[in-house]
Amino acid sequence: MARQTFWKGYLKLSLVTAAVSLTPATTESNKVRFHVLNRQTKNRVESRYVDSVTHKPVAERDQVKGYPRGEDDYVLLEDEEIEEVGLESTRTIEIDSFVPRGSIDWIWYDKPHFLAPEDKVGVEAFCVIREAMKANDVVGIARLVLYRRERAVLLEPLGKGIVLWTLRYGDEVRDPVAELDSKTEIDSKLLTLMTQLVKEETKDWSPAMVQDPIQKRLKSMIRGKQKSLKKAAPAQKPAPVKSTGNVINIMDALTKSLAAEGGEKAAPMKKWPAILGNDIHKSKT
Image (cartoon, rainbow, N blue to C red; front, side):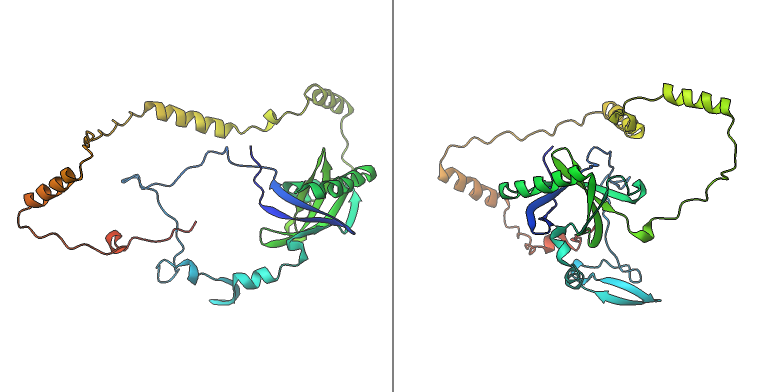
């Protein structure tokens, strides 16, 4: 599958800089997706932004972000103002510290991305940073603006590349549940049996262990419905008109068509886009 680069910038450690790009490490392209349809017409149902009071569609140029400060009272922010808040981390991943590998609990990890050098000039700098982290068994901590927010990110060497993980914010991680009573005694025989069971059920990791059975069933059901549906009869194509290559014949045909209309008045032509009526709305999903 081709790389879908969605961010380009620079990886920086002290005075060492490398041009890099980010690619999402996960994808949902194989997930079964549905369109919402009008049951009667089978036409797709569109999603639009509408005014909550007037219920009229709101054009994109009239949409603005607002921060609530009271009931029906907002501070309005333009996209340009929000973008100006972005710091240098908008285009630069500057590693400012390192922590021992494995010292950050998994619950802080958010989304993985593949980090790769973008040009031949930056390959050496990229590899030096990667190998230095491997040699010290550490991961790098930096900041980066992604998804409209500045985030703490973790850089971890993996094979010939680096995986960049966005980390959750402190207010997004809840406190762990209360610990169990440490004085609880475990039956030694029960523990022996459970240990043996765990050992017998231990296998090598395989991606097959995390396959989605619901998606498989959905695809199977869809294939079954597709087979049961009768194929629509192909529309009959009009017989091709033989061309003689003679312009006079085309003129004759037009003259005969007009003559067949007799003295009837042609209907007035509508101007574009009035011909489509008032149903032209830009969909917003």
